[in-house]
Image (cartoon, rainbow, N blue to C red; front, side, top):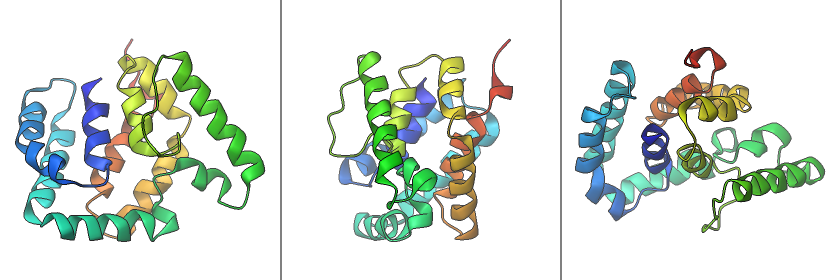
Length: 174
């Protein structure tokens, strides 16, 4: 589903390539029927935020938001197990890597498999219901992360809230 690909791109570390492609992202948002009106407005505002800052400022904000604040980490198993519990976190990361392989998705990144943009990239390979079921496994973590970002008044709360809202089995199509 294209919405997960867009969310993945928007939640990655910002670079010049992202900024160069924001007009295309905006156009996709305007045309895509799988994105509801509220999601579209929230993502357009988030893109406005991205276009209002310099690349350096965006990168500083991103590092400050996600890398310097453990409560905002985009590595989802960190929220489940913390850094200290390698005994539980390691097997969870291995299981996720194996799931990617089963679907034929090759990891070509230095990120751990629980990195949210990578998870969203994977969900983009699934049909809508399958992606919702997959993401529903981490709904509580996504909700906590979205709440933490909202409390910090982070612009990243908007895309995280969309991910969290789509990670619910009540959205399953009949």
